Amino acid sequence: MSLFPVYPLYDITITKALGSTVWDDKGQAYLDMYGGHAVISIGHTHPHWVKRIEDQLHQIAFYSNSVHIALQQQLADKLCQISGKKDYQLFLCNSGAEANENALKLASFHTGRKKIVAFTGSFHGRTSLAVAATDNPSIVAPVNETSNIDFLPFNDEAALLAYFEKSGDQVAAVITEGIQGVGGSELRQIIFCN
Ligand SMILES: Cc1ncc(COP(=O)(O)O)c(C=O)c1O
Image 1: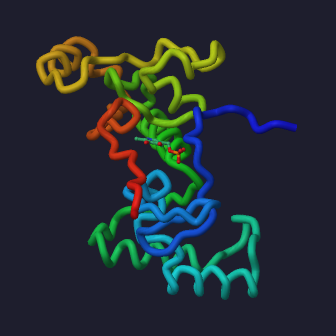
Image 2: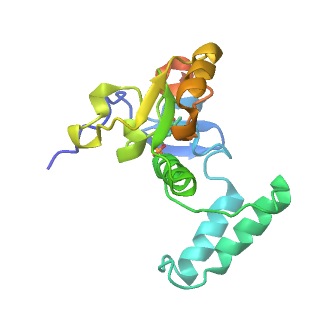
C-alpha cells in the first residue's frame, strides 16, 4: 500500500532531533527553523517533555472524555494563570483545523447566523467548514462547497466596512489568518549545517 499523497514531499528523511537540530538518515545535521510546522516550538526531545510523556504512558495512555481527566483541568488552570482569562472555557481538540471548525460552529450556534467572512489567500485547515473558509478551490471538494462563506480581499479595511454596512447582521464570525503561512509568508526552512 502506498501513502496517500496529501502534500508534495521534500526529499529528506529526518530520523533524530535534539533542541533546534535535526539529523537525516545519512547523519547530516540541519538547523531546524521550521519546528515541524511550528508544532514543536519548545525544541525537539526536551527532557521535561519526554519525561512527562514517558511517565504518563506508564500510567494510562488513553481514556474517553466521558470521565473526569484531572490533567485537563490542571491544564485549564495553568492556562488561566498564564493568560489571566478567568472567565474563559478551555476546549481541547487535536488539530488546528478542528479548532477553527469548532470556533466557527460555536459562533454560528451562539448568533443563530450562517455567514462567515474569510479573506483571500488564507488557509484554515482541511476539515469541511475550515476548508470551505480556505481560499484554495483545489482543496475544496464539491461536498464542502457552501454559499455561507464570503471571501473579502485581505488587508482591505474599506471592503470589510462596506460588507458590514450591507450584510453585517447576517455574520456569525470573521476568520482571519494574520500572517498568511500557506499563502507565502511562513518561514519553511530547514537550514543545512556544516
Ligand atoms: C493558519 C493555519 N490554520 C490552520 C491550520 C490547520 O492546522 P492542522 O494541520 O493542525 O489541522 C494550519 C496548518 O498548517 C495553518 O497553518
